[in-house]
Length: 507
Ligand code: HEM
Image 1 (cartoon, rainbow, N blue to C red):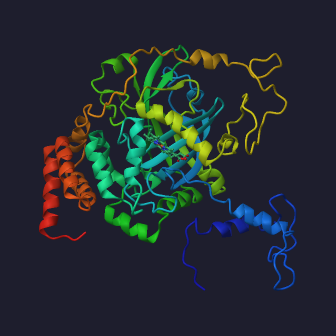
Image 2: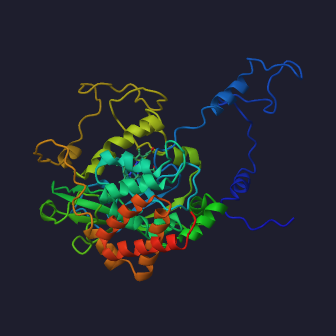
């Protein structure tokens, strides 16, 4: 029989059996007791009922009913891989973070790529932001940099994040998505979304591969160096595979053929030894520059202009290992923006502030109270005063469980204390809406100066393809909002929509 050439992912089971050729393993229960016959339950005669004493069956079925955990409320569909981060340039003048302490230093990492809005089984090749999260396993504990493939986000205040996400999820009555009325209603009412919308509808809205896209930390963070000096920073990772995107038509076709196109691509590349890599950069802004900057440096709907804040090279990372088990190493991995190591601090970025709470909270719900003890999430070591809880793996033996104590329990870390910045704060607490804070300068620059004419053409087509199914009120409002970005953009969207109406295009 002729077997068609198969990709590495398709051969996974064959590979497993080759690697285990000499194994002779008996099946056991989950408590490790050998099972003599796994093919039949324990019945009274051939047609008799099953006995309650069939503990082997009970073990199997009760585990089966608990196989699923809640999927991520966002970024549910994704793929992961492992590798290392290597420092190539000295940035110790900015940060004392151990991960950057020496040129040549390597730190193990885990990376998860994802799309935002679809559920676990959703096709990979849809127009969406892609998540690009990195977990650094450092000697100072876990640092999670939970980035995306687009440099900005749609909203800048975390209180709006759940609402924005709801507009991309299923309609609460019809259970259908996308619901274009929900999306355009929100986007046109909150016009800080315009910058990220232009990026979202550009070619970069559908990457051809997780390997062929850049990554961005998006939010503003802060660095502290060994002298206690403080600066703000942004993170960038640039693909060495070259940027490559899919047209909407290509993406739709692929979605019908292989829903897991990006997952397969990543798995196969790594299985074939074609290890993807990214160069890692930072941008730095001093507090003095931040105070004078013409736009808010803590507003994640804006980029820091490269002309003013150039990319500073730091290192590179390489992905060279596929997960050994998807559930254990990708579904159960939890990235938490609050996991920062000494030398890296949060900034007042409002989205970041909300994220500092939300990830740990969702992990306690999605993965359980002791999610940080799962192998993929665990630091090299921890010495805390937390104890017990469900599914504890490591409850720290006989060490004292209260602080302070006189019995050699873990004590305050002097270096971490020295690196903790003094944060001067003042002001009246108030709900201040920053939604109309210069929403158009940057998308205008992007449209006029960065996008080439053919890219502008495709941007308009992509916007129109999402606008045509919505109602005329939303269409009018979207044309007005895009006209504020650039009158030409608004005009062209209007023309394209009108020509669809004239040609009686049926939705
Ligand atoms: C206040 C704003 C935000 C909130 C409340 C929020 C909340 C969440 C939640 C609940 C998850 C699911 C985590 C899990 O179950 O493990 C998640 C995942 C994620 N978020 Fe956010 N998010 C926010 C903004 C952002 C922004 C601005 C970015 C861009 C960098 C981002 C990037 C990601 C990524 C990449 C993941 C997937 C992590 C993974 O692969 O496991 N989020 N977010």
